[in-house]
Length: 267
Image 1 (cartoon, rainbow, N blue to C red):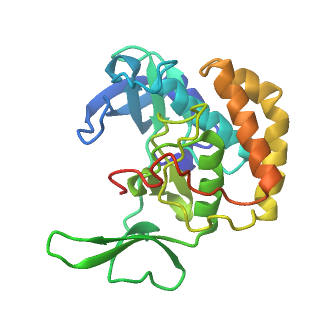
Image 2 (image 1 turned 120 degrees about the horizontal axis):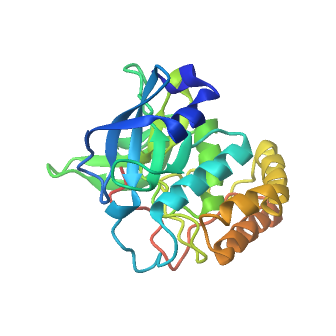
């Protein structure tokens, strides 16, 4: 079953459904399993990331990657942008972990980010960096000038996403864009690494300003309390500070001079 077909049933399915593991996604650096989750005759694909399969990160000594995945979903829902597929923390075949609804990209989905041949990005796309293939041919890493990606760029600045690769952007039904793989987020220091730099230092859209203002309010209330179940108090406070800085600047963020701006590999 597709995400759009589940509607409000998705979270209940993810929380209470029985997980049957189908296999492992071998390209992932931590244990990432795809499976079928079933509850009361309703079945869907999911991604299950057990805490037991996480590799320790020296710069993320507190909490778990799974808890950060869930925290990213909570912030996404608070924005109303639905950028992260439904995600919960639950017990599973290999213990407690993050369980997220699988997003199946339609066969006709058009790419919105990637390496394009040539020196220049096509109209309607932002060039990010130049590259050469093994054959010496020139390419440009670029992304589309799409509202969904602009929202994702703001969202990533809020959660301090250290790993927004092109492969972490998925196109769902109706062209809705989702971001996945949010385990390296919410650090108290600036860790923003992304391929979505097309709007750097541009004024924030009014919609984003309004969303950030509303988000700042709930960070002092219910959202902040929910995040504190998965993050340190310092990380929750840093999230508030990042929202404050975005609102004060009124612009998309600039790349840090102390941290690589683009993740590797970028797609």
